[in-house]
Image (cartoon, rainbow over all chains, first blue to last red):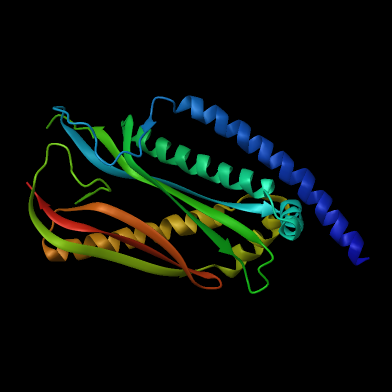
Amino acid sequence: MEFLVFLSLLTIGYLFGRMAEQRHFASIRERETEYRDVLAFSARFPPPTTDRIDAVLVDGNVVVAVDYFKMTAAALRNLLGGRVTSFETLIERARREAILRMKANAQAQGATQIFNVKLETSSIGQGASGQSFSVEVYAYGTALVPAKAA
Amino acid sequence: MLVSNIEIIPGRRVVKHLGMAQGNTVRAKHAGKDLLASLKNIVGGELKGYTELLQEARDEAVQRMVAQAEAMGANAVINVRFSTSSVSAGAAELFAYGTAVVLE
């Protein structure tokens, strides 16, 4: 009985998780094209300019949870060592999503450049069991917004 | 109040350096949202409740930092950084810090 529950959770996790991931990646690719004009730099100093600009802090964050299948796959991986592919794609999704949200935020304010972009990743464990795992990625940077004519 | 994570604001000069301003907040998860999240952990995907919660908490940390900077007499906080740490199971600390300055 317990094994059946485990197996069905695994199947549900695999099917829905895969579907959600593929849909998410498709949406990420689409929006990356959409926000292509907003450039994000990790450079600390913006180039000198004579234009009047305002520096505005923009950010984006996302919390993504693993599915049951990924969790199990990672647990098995832990025995053998090596690449935990299921987590790699999860964190990649979260990073790209957070950057996109930051870019959307910048574009809404009329900026096309974001400087000193930093990414912060933190894992949010749940409960004492530590059975579930989700990851938060926070992206922030300074958007250069053209100053409104005073 | 100008808040930025770059050190030199284009076209503005720092006339006075006032030291570090900081703000933090510790938040715990809502039990109901937590239940929903644990269900989400079977199928995977974004935890919208947590995304909002953390963003809200971060905004509060920034507000506290800004309030401190204002009390110091600053009109800008530059070189702002964020940091997250989990204090105990189910609670996270969001911390924002930066340099309070007076810009021309």
